[in-house]
Image (cartoon, rainbow, N blue to C red; front, side, top):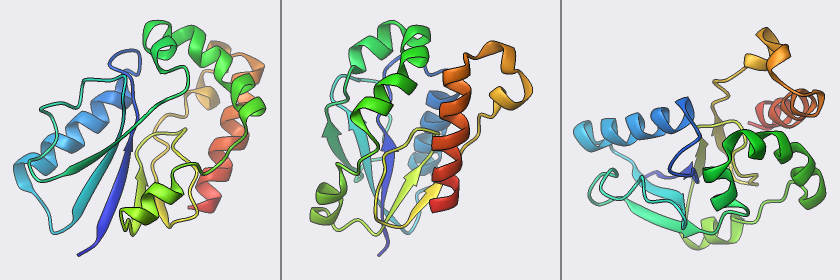
Amino acid sequence: MLHVAIDARLPDAGQGGVLSVVKAMAAAFKEHGSGIRRTWVVAKQATWWRGSLPDGDSTLEVSVPAGSVAAKLPTLSSRLAPAVLRVIGDRNSLDAAFQESRIDVVHLPYQDGVRTELPFVYFPHDLQHVHLPGNFTPAQIQHRETRWRRRAQEA
């Protein structure tokens, strides 16, 4: 049976449409099931997923750097993220856990999903910076154009 890890490391608030998409995906799996095994990668600091995930699905709880800051100050966090990611890099820190859990493929349902060497599906559903560039700083636009483009190419 195919084993999919779903990157759902989202705070309880401040993610708007992204959190709605992930919750809707969980609800759909809960209602209709599927022939795949799922492990949801969730933030230890978050609680949104408790009671929302399908019975029988497993979770991998991980610490998210600055997760509490992102939840409390989403706009500031969004503006600081490009600089922080340049400093900490783009590493695949969850691959060992994925291999231990025997994950076959990773689903990244939002733009800044985890970097992995495993096969992955990437879902960059928010391209506002292309159509509304005035809403973003130059650093945010550069981050979106480089990191998100690289994810799409790697997928």
